[in-house]
Length: 238
Image (cartoon, rainbow, N blue to C red; front, side, top):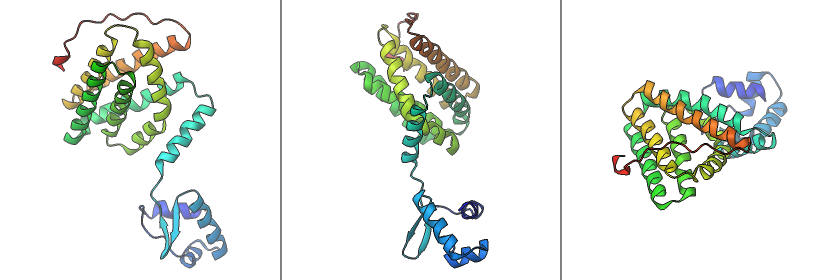
């Protein structure tokens, strides 16, 4: 089975491409057709290939199922909130630098729309909508890095991180003006990416995630959060 996987990778095959026939694979790998047939069955069960009329074809990866499985595995393995956030910092701080260099006009338009959703949730005082928009904002910024590996890693931790956001935003909601401050942080990140200011984008994202890290540690320890000093903000500025 491993030999066939190597052939797939080395051959640069894409989803929809046809594999060699059983006979051709048997000759190529110097094994019997029975061995090839069993290996293909295993690869089909793993979702790597599919057998249909005309031969065996490379299958489009079903990433959603993989993401849910990984999130479930991490939850069962008692991955801590702090470990999760450490991982997100590794992903997002690198991704934001790439996004500032590589973002497209389409990326900026989509991120701007997400910010409008966040602003509307703020006006409606709707926590769930606000958390959804916050989550989408971070996920799409990573996609804007144009790095597929970072995007896959981000999506793999998506379910757990949304739960973390929900917990922290609910706690922070008790402080007047905090939601506006959070929106302002996200807007500043967007503006740095829009302006392609790599240094500023990295700085603001680092500060944003480290603040979240500090708040989460207090929550995990069962301590009250310190009321932040928040200046009055005119939302029309954003």
